Structure formats: structure tokens, C-alpha cells
Length: 510
Image 1 (cartoon, one colour):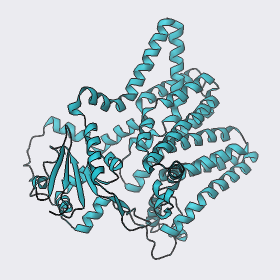
Image 2 (cartoon, helix red, strand yellow):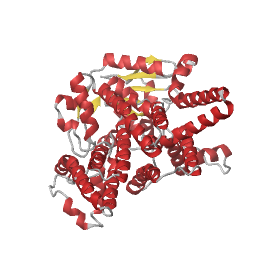
Image 3 (cartoon, rainbow, N blue to C red):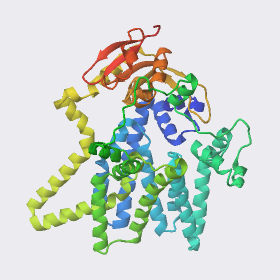
Image 4 (cartoon, rainbow, N blue to C red):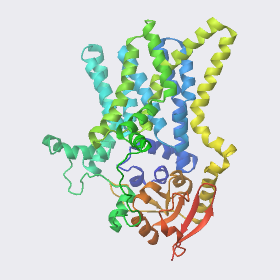
């Protein structure tokens, strides 16, 4: 989409399913620097991550009044691995984190000051946040609404809050008009239009916002694999290839434990905890307790904590209400980690002072060791693959993926196909790869069908192979065993076998 924006193909770049700000920024980088869209997205993410230290510094300085704590919180952000990792993927996470932190800073300043500029900063940040992630629309509206409600109690603030709301609406207006003409509702994202169309049955007055053009009808879109299911009309019955195991009356304790770990509640709790980023959150919790015990807690800290909690609740609540399921992803919550860094920095500073006071030089050594351990734990997620590659090459798949990507790139000339639709992103790249490693799609400019989807409907996968819809399969040999068609030399040939992954190519004319 960034490359499409750079080429001037705005119908593909500004698609109704995706918010436009990240596409525009990465598209500008792609155009000005003449780089690939993937590199432009990574560069945009890197710039947003780098700029995030500025608002977090001023947030900490505003609520604590300490310069050292402010600098420490900025350094903690630099070592926040989940946000660093998102740079490599070129995702919108860092842009959202930057705008969310800017929103928090501007809101705190507007909370304690009647100066118009802080209200305008808040309007700019919340508008940018809304144009980056659709799940932030409710959060942004709540922030601006809170400023207006608070302004009702202070005559000097009501004018500033009304102007800020006008600016917020004005920034969103072009995109809302674009959406009204494309999907029938003036909403930031297609999902919002789908929700409104469903609510119309119970709240008829919502229909006033609906564009009556008969060609516009909000409906949930399907991913490519589901579209292929409809196109090829293949039964999902795999009983012949996968006979059911006989039921047993006794329940294995390990099976019971596995069932518990696969439960919805357990999965939700684990993802929610990962989204809090425990390495920093535990220290932040300690910092909050220290501030409360020492009587230094102030109302601005209450405001900041409320923003953090409300953001996480809106993320979980929207999924629960819209999809009727208890679900979240850790990456949805990790972007809010910078909001609690002031208290993490407070805990670090307190530990440092106490160790220095009681143990002198030994205390400094212990503090340095603690910092080193936390950094190692923080970066362990990213260095794990490097360690495996260096010391356990037999268990590393990164080398295989690099070699496989090179092979596919030498054979593949990607083509973009599909029909444009305001509701469905039908533009996709061909050929198509079946693999667990979605990153191969970036490295080879190919469309990816996940291995889980392909193995869930083996008859359909077999037919897609025979129809040459699927061109490559990159799987572990043991995972590929259910696909018996891979052994048929008429359709498939194995062209690479690595330590971990094997590459099969579908013959063009079997």
C-alpha cells in the first residue's frame, strides 16, 4: 500500500479497510527515498519509536518534577524490546505508541492548564491516533469528550475545549467523507460501519447517517482462504484422511491440563499479562506503591493511570462487544507500555538511592547487575533465535528461511491481481505460499496462506495445489505428513530440504 501511494494508485493505497495515516507517511518515505514499501514502513516505525522518548520525558517531568526520573523513563523506553521488535515488522505499533503518548502528555497539560495550545495538541494527537488504528476511535472520542465535560466547570476552558473538538472533527472530516462515499457510513473503519448497520435494526435513527446508495452494503469480509473455500466449494470433511480416535472413559491428567491451557479464559489471561510487559509492569506497580506510601502521589498521576487503564479496557471491551468473545492480543496492549514508565523509573531511582546509601560502592555494583539482568531478560525474546542459530544450528530455522526466500525470489515474478472493493481488500500477490512463517510473504513478495488454515481443510488445499493456486509450500516435514499429495511427483517436487524446513514447488503443468 505504501508503494501504491508512491505510484499514485490511491484507490489501492487509501483502502476503506485500513486507516490512512500510516500508509501516507510510509508512502511519502517510499516516494522521497525511492525505497521499497517494506523498508519505508520499517523506517516510519523507527522514526515514530525514536520520537516517543520526547513525550514520555515531558510526561514524567510534569507528574514527578524530577529531571533524573524523566531521563530514566526515556532510557527505559529505548530498552523496551516489544516496541523495538515491531520496527522489524514495519507495523503501525510504534506510530500508535507515539501518538498515544503524545495524547497522554497533551491531555495532562490541558487538565491542569487552560492554555489553548495544549487543547490543540490533544486534538492533533487524538485525530492522528484515530487515523492510525480503528480500535482507538472510542478512546480518542472519550478523551476529547472528557475535555469538554471538564470545560463546562471552568469558563476559561470551555472555549478551548470546543475549539479543540472542532479541530479534531476537521482533521477527521476528509476521511469520514471518503468513507461515507465508499462504505455508506461516515466512520473511520469498515468494522464501525458493520456495527452501525447491525445496530440500525434496534436503533432506527442511526439510519440517518447511512448513504442510501444501493451499491453500498456493509458486510463482514472474508480472508483469502475463506474466499477460496466459497470459490472452489470443497467440503471440509476430512474424516477419510483423518479417522477419529476412539473415545476413552478415563481422562489423562496431562490431557486435562492441556485442555485447561487451551481454554478461552486461560489464553486471554496469558495474552493480557504479556500485553502488560511484566518486566516493566512489576517495577511500575512497585513505583506506584512507593509514591502512595511516601505521600507524593498527585492528581496528574491519577489522570495518567486512568488513561492507561481505560485504553486497555476499551481494547478488550470492543472485541467482547463486537465479536462476542473474550479475546485480546498482547500487541494491542504493548503499545500502551510507555504510559506507565514514569513509575517504572521511580522504582529504579528508589532502588538505586537505597543501595547507594546502604551499601555504597557495592550497592552501585548490585544496581548495575540488576539493570543488566533486566536488559538480558527483556532482550531474550529477540536473541533466542540468534543463540539457537549460533549454538544449536540444528534447531534454527532462520537460515532455512533465508535460503528458501532466495530460491523463491529467483523463480518468482510477483503479480498483483484481484478486483477492487470498498469492503474487501481483494488485491493480493501471486504466487501463494503455504507456511507457518508469515515473514516469508515480506521476503518474497508473495501471498501467504498459513499452515494452520491449509491443514484445517486438506481437501481444499489439495485442490488448490492441483489448480496451481498454491505454488509453494514451506513446512516442517513432520507437519506436512497429512498432505499426502506432497509425495505425488506428478504435482509436487521438492527443491530444498534444510535443517528445519523443506520447500516444495507445485509443477505448473502436471
